[in-house]
Image (tube, rainbow over all chains, first blue to last red; front, side, top):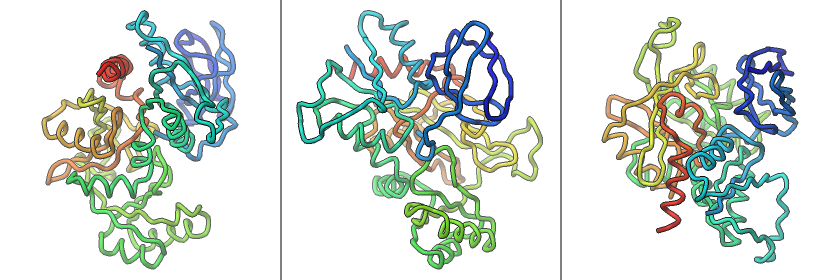
Amino acid sequence: MAKAECPSCFFEWDVDASNIMEGEVITCPDCGADLEVASKDEETLKLEKLDSSSEDWGE
Amino acid sequence: MNIGIVINQITFEARELMNAATKYFPSDIKIELFKNDDFKFDITDENDFKTDVDVFLQRSISMTRAIYTSFILENYGYRVISSHDTLALTEDKLITTSILHKNGIPTPKTMITFTKEAALEAIQELGYPAIIKPVMGSWGRLVALLDNKRTATAIIEDREELGTVFHKVYYLQEYVHKPGRSLDQYIDGDEVARDIRAFVIGDEVASAMYRYEVQDDWRSNVTLGGKAEAYRITSELEEIALKAAKAVNGEIVGVDLMETSKGLVVVEVNGTPQFQGIMKSTGINIPKRILEYVIKSTKQ
């Protein structure tokens, strides 16, 4: 498991990084911010806030 | 077969489709990702965009980009799921509700107005509480419960002052009392009100789930934290969900329904449905089913 920290609310959680890709969008389980996986290794998942607008994001 | 996945960013859905292709169809499917950030189309030249992709799966999170890229790729002669036609019919709630009703699919009573005064009159006709939704938008954004005239006036005045032109198209809907306890009776871990998401692939309902209301909220979107649980597909749900998918020419769509005393009603249809919540709650391998459908429907 790798450690992830939300750059918005600084919440920390454990993630199975083996099944996550660099560039993938994940959601902070605490504050709900959409975050991009900037880089990863076995111990750490480095996350960045998405700079693109999410105004029209959806399904 | 070559499948192109159109994305803004890699999402759970895009990644799981790639994993499923590698795991289940290693010799049949080759996946290529197309980031819509990188697209540069000359739409006045029909030979501008060439690729050996047989089918594109539209997975852009940006709805604007999804609608336009499906349109452009189809114009170049490619098959795209969901098509521009499906996205255009599903991304605007006013159009979706009208199309559903025209096709005999039960929906909650819905009224449209363009001014504050007409909106307040319409809500009076619908009765309080009522729901206001933006005609375009997802994940429950700017959807509000109008408990009384004071709240309704305040919310509509906000939209008049701060909203875009689309926020001033007032989509007003009767409040459907969902089964389960009311919010003021909510106890942590107890049964709460719910709606249903059906995931349609081709002419089948691949799976369905209950989505329970978020605590201290009245919406039940999984993206807002709503809990999900598998739903046993009934013939009534199957019939209505497939009819709704057909009404929007949908091949892979999410149909949202609510239970009422008169039976199920369709609230909306989603043209690029996410499937993380439904996979976790039902155990159904949605990406595998999608790829099976793409192979089968392309051969036909």
